[in-house]
Amino acid sequence: MLGIYMSGTGNTQHCVIKLLGLIDSEVESIRITKANEEKIVDRIKENNTIILAYPTQFSNMPYMVRDFIKRNQTIWLGKKVLCMTTMGIFSGDGAGCSARLLKRYGAEIIGGLQIRMPDAVCDNKMLKKPLKENQRLVKEADKKIEDVAKDIMENGKYPKEGISFISHMVGLFGQRLWFYNKTTEYSKKLKISDDCIGCGLCSKNCPMENLRIKDGKAVAGYSCAMCYFCISTCPKRAITLLGSKVFEQCRYESYEG
Image (cartoon, rainbow, N blue to C red):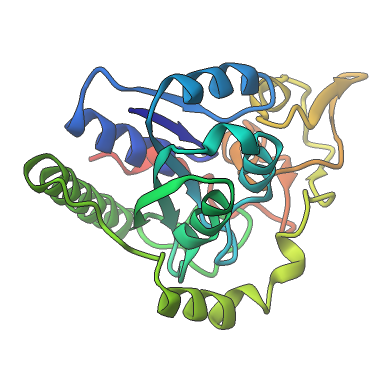
């Protein structure tokens, strides 16, 4: 078994590592980045069961994940895959989006799991909650993951969330069609204010290598995966994407009680 995941603020990373740890503490989990794609492909080839985890974006899988699956379509033949997503409030068929694509390339979808976590969109205050509410969400998520792991270990039963036809319709008409243009390609809208001090944290950790330091300031390219890592960790709150102001730097570590 192998876990691979896209995670910016740490929500998805926490969930997949917790699930894997409960199933088998020796199982490896790897973050999907441009730099380590070759390593991930080799590890997928070596394992029969894969847990693929990512945050839902507008009831869709991130373009970065979709691109990774398509670019390496030959490695999925015969693999057993559990598609796992995290969401702020609504997912619909967030897990089903990758499941359908993977099935096209010969994978066997053994399940779907959708976990509600604290909102990760740092520059929009719509879904922001008090700390105690976010801590409650994390506890509920942990309990759900524990129950899922127990069912897998004791009964060999995987959850089937987000992969049914009904879920497909809910996700498609509930949100994806309305926001389809936001998830058809990488974003070009990452903005960096004059507050940037050129510390290099964003360029060092961007999964798409979309940021670089030039003349003492961060400069964004045109392949933002909307993971929000740079926005959630910038010491000067100098980076925004969907909004024009950082309301909260959403990091999983902030909610650990």
